[in-house]
Image (tube, helix red, strand yellow):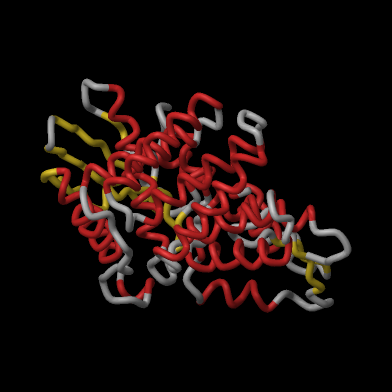
Length: 333
């Protein structure tokens, strides 16, 4: 889609400048938009010359590389990558490429300029993590796609209990490097509810790592991790939301009887939302229950929209929202 957008921009800036019909693919979407530009040259071409390019506000966070000897620490690296994506996505005017797009480059040799072209971004955040016992060392670099040069590189070393501070330090540094006049916000981050202990957070990360495998074994293992995380911290809404997601997927895949799993998914989803109504994950989980179990499509769509509003990078919410649109009869979307 990034290449398609680039081709369309190049065409309408050159040989197609006088075309009456213009085709665009909005960022974050796959559905083309058609507009009638009239018989005169499109005014947006001239405006684009004076306004900052969209790419200057777009960034991709590539999967953090696991440099530890223990391959099982991959869950921690994936979790750190997702947390950085979610954290940076909350910065106003900063567009962050979704996880599903950036994770295609995990474990592959990559040329940053090619990655930038494929993802339609001007800057890329990459890094690595070494974990030893309860200590981690994270190295993160921000790279300019145009020339492949580093804009900055930082190293963070601390106990695992300070992982939240690492997320905030990295996001603040990225924000400053992208210039305040472009982003329009002072350095800072949106506060989110955190688990009370690193053990619960580690269980949650392992749960999400297993859940994304979308296999029966992975879902059952994920359910164990989420359950332990919720027991360690009963106020950890994202862990309770994970329990709901596991029961939902087990029921939908017929790995467990739906009449047993779905009520448990509904109970956990509602409990998660009560714990944190500002969490996109909790809204998406409850919306999925309403969509797939209760068949309350209107309430499901409302939940999906709220999830996307809270976190535009929530790819599960986006995909599920399309599911709602396709399964609601008699309504235009």
